[in-house]
Image 1 (cartoon, one colour):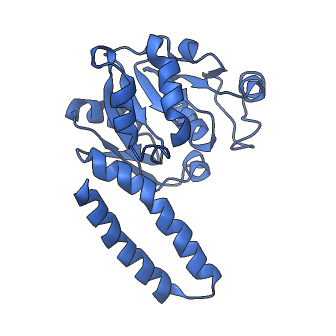
Image 2 (cartoon, rainbow, N blue to C red):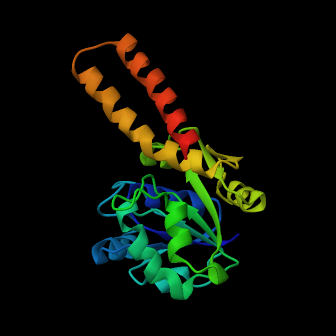
Length: 230
């Protein structure tokens, strides 16, 4: 059992909190909204996201980010990419080198075009910078908490950090795989959403499976070229 801090109580952050608690971990969940904090602590549900999903009593919520991180072995970033830099700045007093930062943020910083690993490297001094793991994959939050079989990947330059994340977060229907391609995983997790929106537009225009398959196939080729250029 480990203490896990999850920064962000949106759908994905809440789903990860639920799965980690089911796996036997002690989970601290940071939420900006005091009503969400109260709802989780009093009624064991998130009143805004994933409504109807019971949150295990071992998940405790707080609006104090340093309190949430106290004693944590794993720190999961599950807030929107545009908020990551400011959140990391607020986390600095509590960050310790022996922690592992897990980025579950699907996106790129709007203002700079930087990946989350680059933002972490810029904001957190090397002396206190934890090891970094990117957690990404095709994973709808509600399906994860409803125990639909789901596969995600933990990407890291540090094989041991990726192994720890795989071991601690894989549980029942959620399987975590490992790789060392942080750049490809971060970019794939970001730009795949562009292709998903485009596929929805194609379907909305009345085109069928041929058109959607062509879009996805060419989209994968473009994503590969983008990753190779980084």
